[in-house]
Length: 199
Image 1: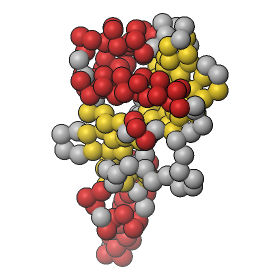
Image 2: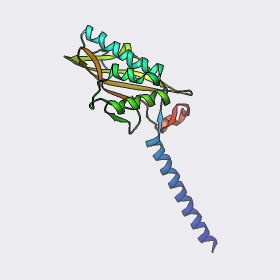
Image 3: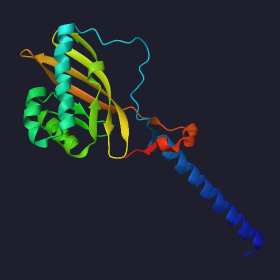
Image 4: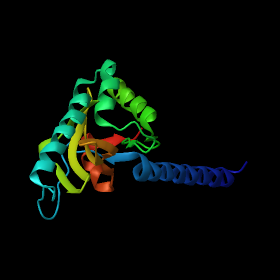
């Protein structure tokens, strides 16, 4: 094999390797690497606690505190009473987890999901008193911030929920947990301590 042919082969291999590395890095940056500041989400626009009448707001806050306290205590032996207190025993109940493929429908699926959260997830800290609560009749909508604390880091979350007043008691019909991290950009490579790889 001539030296000219060997040089051409090396250039082709080098070009292919650079292409592969660039493709992999681009895929990682756009799909798998995120930035987490650990801070609560900054809300733009008008500061509002919602339009719920004060009595309704206070009633819903009691239910939000109960939701929060269960996630703080994480007592899997108390799951049955927790579920009965906060969720109607119905197929329409839904809880969406923060990660992909965590759509739970029905009382039993939601109960299993929350039990697993308590056993395996980090500590969920919710900013209940700052919640936005709106209501009309027997339906209330809630949005609030929080974070999940793990042994080595913390990640901010947003929680939204829909509650219904059933037999005079506010119950959660839907709860949605969302990570508030964002995808990493090139400028974020200057602050690698904030980067995290999605699971």
